Image (cartoon, rainbow, N blue to C red; front, side, top):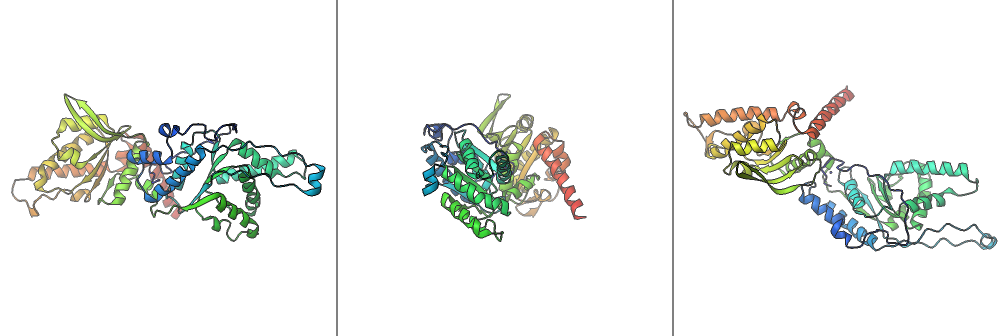
Length: 447
């Protein structure tokens, strides 16, 4: 998901602004000092990675850097006013007219790549960081439906010989000098023939475009009817927008589907990413507090990461340090969801850590806390009952083995959909129910 994990299309669709634009001021109505207050895409990306809402990805980082460059250019860009064209005079008809003077606007960005790699997330980060009302974010299919509706309305209200495209382009530019398109694609001749002129007129008006697509511009409208007539549009797209590929090899939508699970083994980069996906979903992408503190009974407990009722601890934070049942009960009382990462396989040599782990599980179970966990091995193999690789005999260790068997039974129950859907985290409960419904739909679709 940017590498977002959040919600896999970790952000909601942002509504377009249709407010007027004051050409006398800079396009971005804030000064450069606004960078310290609002920040650009790079700053926001770093903050979200630090908060644990995003997974740092070198490919996405490079795209965000390019979007930040555009953000900086827009801070100092002042577009000229849009002037309505004058009616053609006798001499202009006789000798022809010159094309309107082009506006040298900052070059936009055309982001293409496979599905689920974070194209929309990075673009939305850019969109939300722009401190202006003269912007619009819209799915490209919806945009084209609107354009065709505008053309039909124009033809009903104007003379048949009047060209609707320049007027519509100016209207769009007047409402939004920055347009972000999601999923740019051209599949039919009607769209292709309108776009080849509409985009040209919008660029003439100084519109800055950022768009995502699954295809490189050269592959747009491939094998389409009269494609040669559409080629100038492709050339202008490549001229007005820098074309960049975002193919990190990671499908973050798949990570979102993984977030229906709560137990992950063994510990790999993929399981770590999936754990972060669940944390983001469970906390609804809330701002993360780092190294918070719980105070109770004259004691304090450091919480490495927490957000909206969700806490994240390493196994070593809770089970290898001197903590007892009072700590775990308070933790279960305060947080409805606990992420516990890097749980190792435990031997009899680790009996103190194993005892604390068992006590922790008991406290979480009694409070019906949703436990999200990554471990070196599957649940049944987490405790060996061995000393340094040798099987323990006699009565020594039998209590630990029995207690761990009870903990294993509880862990199995705590990873069930029933436990999650009846748990204290409404977001994970709703997600688990929805995933169940999706599974039923998939089964029905295959029968």
